[in-house]
Length: 343
Image (cartoon, rainbow, N blue to C red; front, side):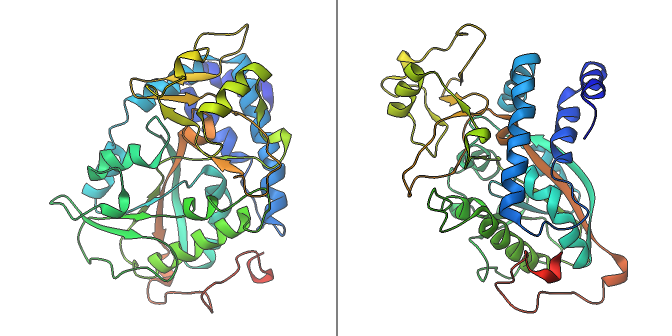
């Protein structure tokens, strides 16, 4: 990782400090070899990710004000521009920098390479409905339709990939990894590794149809992931009590006119702030959350204003020229990407 002194110096000198923060966060997940234990890898890196954001929360508070301003101004132009340039655009619901950091080797093995790894700022609240409304004119991606500017396809998961239009601007909304992340609970029947595998399997099925056109993969929002107290920040008891009444564990944003929202402290409490508020929603700030021992309670959430929810990947992917005439594919559907052959 970048030395802390160098990191702070770059934050001060860089015109856009979010670039430095994105690069520092992404570095946590860059690997030369695919992790042999993906769950352990996620859990260990999540602790370091939380520590990094906590240092920024206490030492560089202005970054949240910047994130919030950029989030409020999000117009979706970074997607529309790629469509105009001829990219096939894939919105992978809830895809975060975690997945981008470790998927490069898998894509390369299949004849693709990541040409550019940058980020966009997700619209607040960091919910699916925010970007869906901007791009599709509806809060439900499953209800999206073709429009004059692009053809539209909705993909729920592996085995449900439709035929893609050829030679036309195409926007694809992939319901993963979010669909699987919703099943990652304290019981760990479904794990974070299952969500990664399902996402990669479906992405590969999509890429198998796209050989000569560049692909742009991005996300509507990231997500908070917590299976250990080192993955989140604990609120004072009195505030947590109110939050539990108003926020479902899996949603870190709620309508601002919801009854009871007026009881929350929106100004600084000592050196702490716990919430951010727009005209329409109240979101939990940073990585504040709460623990649960109930087997069915979620280990993932989104909607708030943490760095991992707000800074989303925006990557350009291209087919290697040497493999344009042979499209590699997994030997079988349901391929486990944690298997020995992928290390």
